[in-house]
Image (cartoon, rainbow, N blue to C red; front, side, top):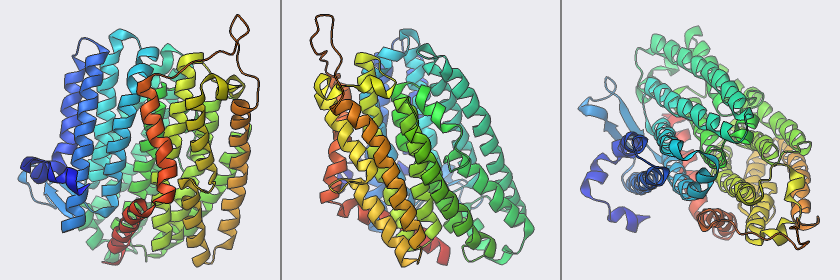
Length: 509
């Protein structure tokens, strides 16, 4: 990363915190007026690559020099809006940037297959707005500005999900449900921010954090915490606030599902970590209670309940959607443990889950573009029909279960170690139980792919197909990453340990 960062021009080093959001926002306006989808795709690809490179530059700067504080418009915080980057949100910037690039590469054949030609440029424009909004949530140091970016990303996401109606009309209902629940979540969040402003007189999160400890007995601050946790919990699909997610993932265009599965709930989880440790005072009774009775308990219930729901699904994408709810439960358990090891394990699973689920949904999209599959029974024999895609799907599926030699093993190992260190043996038992249930639903899909009789063409021969190269490349990048980072985990572990250190440093200042 240091080599790439050294190639960045001085303007990126100086203004990268602003450019990482401004570039995709301006690119969205340009893409919207393009005459065809291919030009819109090229603009989206250039914008996401630029943002990923800026994310590298910012991360290297943070690792070398510490926290970056960027005053928007020259207005110094706390009066002005601050973009503030430390080791905690640097991980999110890297994740959003790189998954954004891989998703856009994947998008060209996928979007061409699902979205009408005259709407593709607008589709890529909406994606860039969503991409910029997620980056803005991750980078801002202003609580109200975070609400604004949450809504920027959410509103564009509703549009993206709804555009799946060209293939399945149920996408409109999914988008409408997502809109209603997302708006409720945003309303809860902004009410909480309003209460915090009432109590502290500031919207700057760093400044707010310095004033809250002396207000920990304030009913206003306690109400603010409750509203913010509910609002962000809904955005993160924390059980039982996850009802928007299964249909949104199942009926959105394949590219949208890939991007949302790798970024959206992860950014919302980051905001929960930021508020729980860096804004509120963890030693306050009402915050300390929430770690066990909200994050940990709801996390482990979600692990089991959502995994059981996944077992009984017949639609492959809905199965993986319920699996995502269960995986959010693992992250919530890490947050609920509340220790350096627990938060680090939760952040590690955040990154690893993006690699697992990104590869899985990419593979399902590749199966769909060639054979139009949706149900698990439609996957029959794809090991012989589409072997390259089937192997990538298998690697990611085994990683989702936590099989050794995949990154999923490290996620569950470090989470279990953190729980044991905290004396939570019962949480380790639930992690094992949830993993066994996960093995059951992954086995259903792998049995269909590797054991069942393959599809045949009209001549009686096995129907062979190959996914487009632009779909295979990002899919295999993620599949290889699932194995590579098992044998070379130091990079990810150092990033997530630093992120957890930054979170807990905020809690102790």
